[in-house]
Picture (cartoon, rainbow, N blue to C red):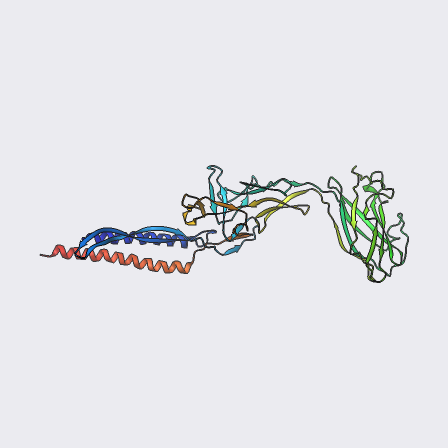
Length: 425
């Protein structure tokens, strides 16, 4: 190997260590970049020539070169943002994005997404997040990869009240009384009000009065104000149904309740509301009601109807389900996020902005639901931080700097040796 060749060996060392320093600088620069994955440089030697000697053939190296720049795909720390549309994958998997111009798919761990002005779930570059969509009812999942879209003007249809639940305690010390529709408050010992909904989602207020008729027996009477009944008079209550409750004299527990359906008049004819809608029967469950020597009080009051509702917000569950919240208190499934994994993560091609593209080296993406097939779960309102280890990068920086200085020293030393050679006589 000639003396001049040493220049090129040292020069290759300068080049490779310059690249290593560039990678270290890139890692440190992206210390606060969400979803960023750090890289490390792998060197390899360069075989220059073979020298034949008495003992055989020896091979001489002529420096170093970059073998590969490998990505470090370990998970970074999850940081809370409290933004409902921010998501982080806790475990394996990349979020899938689609560029609407090129139709190309990208993959990322950076889950800073939002709903754009057209309703699509996108990242900062406008790429659309991919997932599986639910049908209009939010019950059946169509497992075909598609753009996730949230219809900001969507409504949940109203639901007519068909079942109600009342759990209360009725004071056993109350006096017996006879209920009179003309004076319901004065001829009963306790009352409670609740709203029900007709088939169009219109709310109607129903008041149920409870009157003690015997030691262990009570009567209940449901009424509605006449202003809310077709042909009724405002301020005059209209009977919506009556029934009885019987209690065990020893335990105070409910023995029976009859009937269990109300919101029809005593003749069984459905009442017609003032808006022209016929009232629907409601099955009432009094299970759990008691008669103790304590003040009458309502403990549970539920019904299953609701009015029409408009979308107010979007959240993501741990299983990746994107759900919409509506003004009527209902939630509806909209879509399911999809995560992708690859046979060879180091075969992924960096595309900038914490995005990656698949390649023949990475293999085809393996799409799956969060929490299924080894995929991670979804943490809503969180983002994954960069996995750059600052302390490790500083150590690498010192080693790389020393290696660069050593190669620079080789060049100055060889230059001095050549000068000595030229000056020899």
